[in-house]
Image 1 (cartoon, rainbow, N blue to C red):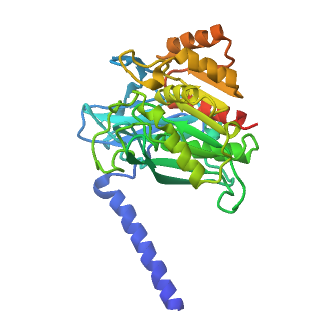
Image 2: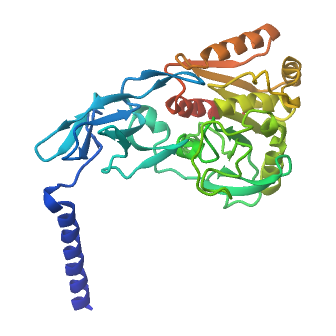
Image 3: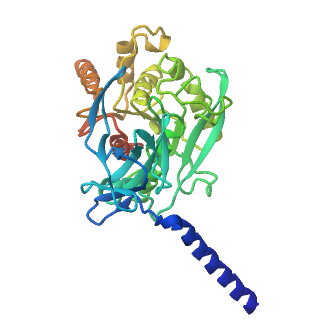
Length: 399
């Protein structure tokens, strides 16, 4: 037995040394990228000895303006890397605030991923590398030594949309251990270009809710994250359409069909999970397009939700869209107000391209006497704000 263990140990050492030798093959040392320093500056490295230029683009850099058909957006800036005598290009950032950041490399004009960083995330049709500078804001969603909830993908039948569809469901710590306890539900909706995976992957919803519950700041709750694109069964690559290029706005995305069929989601959840199935224990919130959906779902079903959250929300429907859901908006808002609710929460960044729309909507609410909580932050239409909004909204639920 001792001889066998000795042989296995020697074999493991040989394999380890061989792997290190492979990494250093042809004089190429193992590349560490990104490297986060104590002062929160970050060094990026990229091996490309034959490249003429290497740049980096990411949301940690100063933004640039870009005009699109949906309006003017702040987009990540770019920085030039410097090449050493071994063909390794590098760039060190200024000290960064604690947060989650995404970035890509641009090698001779071709955008690609950082080969030294295995951590990737998809946003609509693009894939980025990511890294986290810990502390501060990142403490909201850093994985900690606390009890963790479970996350599942569930298929449900939607008669209103005439298809099987998929949602992501977070259940809080202890849900599986108990057979009797019932929980309130937050329906958390994504923005344009997103799907039922967006709040988990980009928004880090489960980490945020885990940490809030562990700190006693939020009540244990179920969080339901449906797919808000009515032509999709599920996220790209996860439905019967197979692998296809995602797009920012799916057909029929904001035409009233999703809001009109939303009770299919609620009915499935209340049939299949141990929930408190009443207005006082339901919340709906979303970002951008999901904020639009939350606004119209909550007034179209005015006796359904006691808590509503609009994160950088789109507001009014396109005038050319004809849908029963968008009829008599002012009247249904008044009905919602008269029925009563516990919290109507609105958050927006000062440089968000939807800022004026939200300002105009707040005036409408002010004129009709509809009470709301308003939070204004720095920044624009970005996930760094929406993660914070969720962390501020969730502790106010189900009091």
